[in-house]
Structures are given as structure tokens and as C-alpha cells.
Length: 196
Image (cartoon, rainbow, N blue to C red; front, top):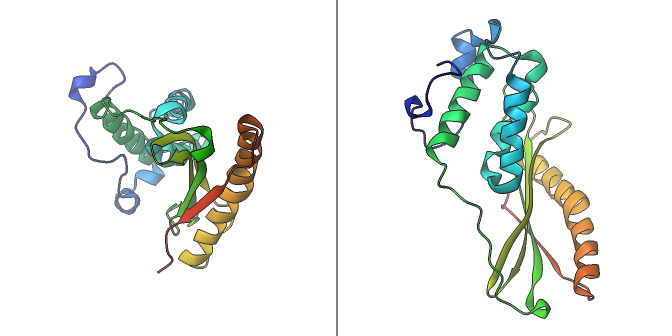
């Protein structure tokens, strides 16, 4: 599919991910990518949109952003899949609502990690999302998907790294900011998935 093809010819997908093991088996990693010269521009435009209103795209975009300097045909396939998914989910929106007094809201921080999801270097990815929440309030504030800097030896280690990232880089700074905005100490609740 070329860049000039109309968006209506994109296939419909339920998620933006491709089985990278299959791409490796088929030799896509050995061929230079056709979109290498335009990849950075395309990926950064997608990243801007994802950071503003499509948090669910951050993992897929982050994977591509980390490979723009070594772009192969495999990344062409991943970018096509991501673009197709975005095209068929344009109706997805980030929604938040506030219906509580400021004394009833809390900062809610959710962290999670996968284990060795990057097939190139076998590193895990940390996911963090924060909300301002209360009985009638749920306002998304921040989300990030970040590749971990070292290889985890198991899922619990990857989860602990995600909790550390969320607490240090998002939870504590957000709590300090909201303490100032609300003129009172705010409670930050940390949620994480249970380890197996």
C-alpha cells in the first residue's frame, strides 16, 4: 500500500499489533524499509495524537519510535498495521468527567508491565496512567508506555520496575502539583496488576 492510496482501502483491525515472530521468520528484518525516509515524521505525528487523546496507541508507537534509525521492512508492516488500526478507530475518544467537590477527589495511579515484549532486545515495557478520581469524577491526566532500560528476569521484576517508574516519575510529581492546585494534601492511590 502506498502513501497515496485512499484511507478506505486500509483493512480493519481489532488492535495495532503484529506477530513480530512471524515477521522475523519471513525475513522482513533483513530487508530495508521503503518508508525509512518518512518514518520519523509519520511516527511523531501519530505520537502527538496518541499523547493528546489516544493513550492506547502509545505502546505501538513507542516501539516504532525506537526503531526509526534502523528501519526495515518489518517496521513498514508494523506502521501499516498501526495506520490501519487508527483509520478504523477514528471514533475512539478520550473522555473524562468531573462531578465531585475538590475535597472528594484523589489521584489514582495505575501501573503495569509486560514481560520481554520487545522481540529485538527482549526488554519489558512499563505502562503508567494517572487519573483524578472520585465518586463522580474520572479525569485522565497522563499516560506513558516506556521500554525498560534493562532486561527483567521475570514478570514480578518487570512489574516492580513499572511501579517504581510510575511512583517516581508520575505519582510524586503529580501529587505535589495537585497539592498546590487544590491547596490541600491529596491522596495518591497506586494500583498495579497482581504478579502471577
